[in-house]
Image (cartoon, rainbow, N blue to C red; front, side):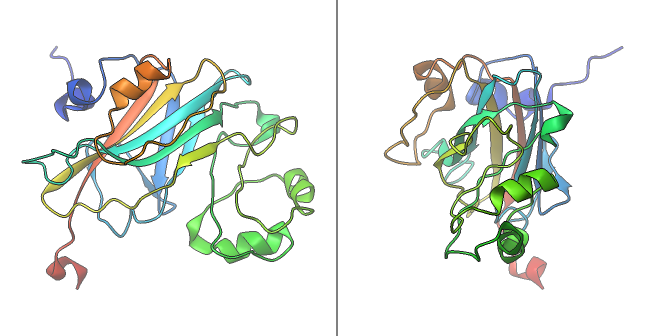
Length: 235
């Protein structure tokens, strides 16, 4: 029986971005509430304009993760001299599986203006920009919050909002020329650590970042393809 090719190898993610690794943590990336990624999927720019929901499954309440998203083909697949272009970075993401803490998920949101005082109205005003699955006990705990500028969901009550640090804000993918590959790489941290944002989003190197921060090999990765939407397609 022939072996099924590894999609990360076929997509040249293994080699160009990270070394070969064995996936050990479940990560689900979902755009637009219902577009769950699988390796090699093709998505159109309108679908990926807003940051996705990322669910991470783990078995250690003390674990924390770093998520990196990059464009491997910037500015064009034939001449990717800006590789990698950093689109998103979140560190200190809690890894939680205990059902008493709710669903394994994290989400960091930014508010352009102070929302209403209660969390219920804040969630309504956020609209389609974020998706939360908070237990009612968590809602009661958050009702006393001041105007919301950042929120992390599904964390145990003993932790605080410093979990899930958005080091680099989400930038909507913009494949101007050709088909671009976009990758999410998840690393397990040895502990919480301070990470400074890079001076530029261009010329980022996931492999070098991992070495410099002692992250080791990835524990999961997934990539998708996207290209510029034509005028005919928009009609």
